[in-house]
Structures are given as structure tokens and as C-alpha cells.
Image 1 (cartoon, rainbow, N blue to C red):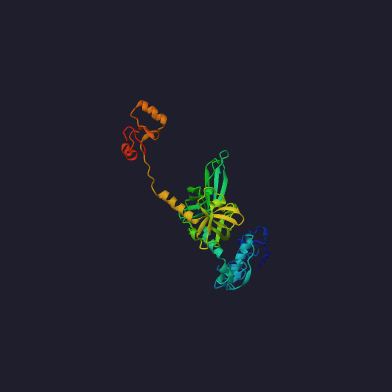
Image 2 (tube, helix red, strand yellow):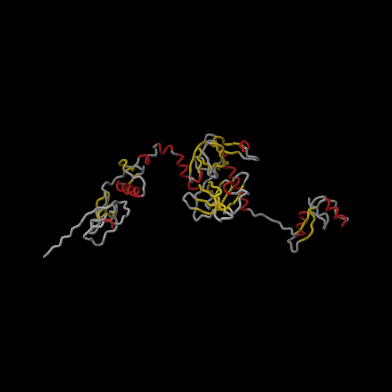
Length: 414
């Protein structure tokens, strides 16, 4: 009886993947695929290519199963980590065991990021001790984490009349005040000047990256406040308005927005003055006191919220004079604008239709009419009803209620 001898050549490449169904007499490393293996690599069944090793929790110990990956051992048919205790990584995160840390590190390296190594055994102290300085003094980070999901980036485009493409005119920030998608911002962020031709278009990007088309809902150009509306497919995060009347000089404030189109940029400072008259800033016909702060506000921050440490909006970032001197519209003025805007949209406006055609009375017209009719009254102002529109509603009754006629043919307006 002859016994054939099969020689296996073990060549370890930097690749992994599916095991060949049939081992050849010669190993061709160039034919090995190159998958990504967070759990590590082991030789395939033929000892030619490197393939993904079973990860923690994968089955093991059966006839065709590959050996468990680095740092793992097969226990009761399942790959388990040899060191079953928490470790702290150099990224500041706590991992259930060193095997989980290594898996994250491999994944990071494969994506071109820095590797994660073990800092020490046990959980990361700074993340589990509320008494640590990182927990005690990072109150600004707590505020930002609370308000950021409700802050949006706004871009205003106009369609070029000749080339048809959309040209960006400006960008700014805003914040959501209703779950249905009402957003507060500056009027100058969402409106165009009279010199701009073309149909304007608003685009809003949320904190999570979702983008929507928006429509202007209401504008107060004098106060530089506006509301716009999007139609989201989900319930949105919102910010509540605080009372700017309670602000004190020296209070910490946080400004968040999109300066130079860099979204979710955070700056902080204090309230320098709670009430700065707009006329001091050179704003003509101003009837508003602004909040002065040393929080850095740049182009693109306009319309973003200025919040206190409770996460309440106490102003809209709107104006920068120089480094360290910026101004915000107080929240009490915003509240008044929102109330008036809501009333405007909910209250039914009554419109009256008289059904008449009139001309303005002048001295010259009166003289001509007196030549035609000596009984025409001596009036030098008012209107003359020339014609009653056929089938107009309740014209005679409306005239008597409003004009109080001296005569049926000549009605004087008081």
C-alpha cells in the first residue's frame, strides 16, 4: 500500500478572508483577499492566507472552527477573554476587558486613527468620580451638551437669473423654539436687500446633519428678529427662553453658532452690561437695550443663541463691534415678538368690502361739482362715491354705519 505525502507550505501574508474550499499543492499569497479584522488574524484551514479570527463570544472548539483570536481562549465552546477585568484606555474610556480594548484599537488603526492602548487596570477614574476636577468644573460642557441639538445652521441662496445655479448670499445660525420646527434667528440672516434679483431660498441644517428647506414665517426688520419654519419628520429638540430682565453683569454666558460656516462652534464669556442703549451703538431710531458680552461672536454667529448656565436663551447673537465687545438682542424682546407673531397667525383678520368706487375730493373738484349741482355741500376734503358695484354686500347699511351721511347722495366722512 502506497501512502502519498502532502506538503503544506505555511506562508503568512498580511491578508485575511474566506478559507479556500480545497487546499492546493502550492500557496499563492497574491490570491489571498484583504479583509479588515477587528478581532485579529489566524491562518486559514490550508495555512496559506490569514483570515479573521473568531472574536469574543463566537463559537469555538468544533472540528472546523478556527482558533480564538489574540488574548482569547476557548471556554465551554465560546471564545472568551483570558483577562476578564475592566481596563482604562488611553482614549479615556473604560472597557469591559483588554480584548474589547484591542478590538477598538485595531478598528481605529484600520481607519487611519491613533491606536488605543491600556492605560491601567480598572475603570478610568476621571470618568467615574464625580468629585474629579473634570466633573466639578466643566459646567460649560454641560450647557453645550444640553443646547447644541437645538441650534441650526442657516444658508440663504438665490437662483442666478442668467445661469440658473444657486448662489449663496449669506449664512448664519438659529435655534429651534417649537417641536414642529419654528426657528428664531436674525432678520438680516434670512432676508435679502432690494438690489438682489432672483428667488431666495433658505436651507437649514440640524445638529445631526439633517437638512430642510425653510420658509420665512415672520420678520421684524427694526428689531432684527425673524422666525422661519421647517417641516421635520421627527420631534425636534427645543430651547426655552429665559428672562433677560434678571441678567446681572458678570454672569457666565455661552454663545453657539456657525461662524464662517463652521458649525457648532462654542465660545464663552460674561455679561459686560445687561442694558446697552442701541443709540449708543449708532443704531438710528433704536428703541431697544442690547446685552453686551465679551463672548467672541464672528460672521455666521448671527442668529445663534446666547444662553445662561441653565441652558436658557437670554439673547440672540447679532452684532460684533470689536474683539471682546459683542451684542445680543435680549430674550424679553424675542418673547414679545413671538407672542405678537403667534397672535397674528391665530387671530382671524376681518376685512370689509363696501363695493363702491370713490374719488378724492379737492377744492377744484368741489367747484366743478357745484357748477353741476348747486346743492353740493361746501367741502374741501373727503371722497365722492361715484358708483356702487352691482351685487356688493350690504352696501347701503355699511355706508350709514361708517359715513353717517348728511344726504343720501353726498356722504361726508368724519
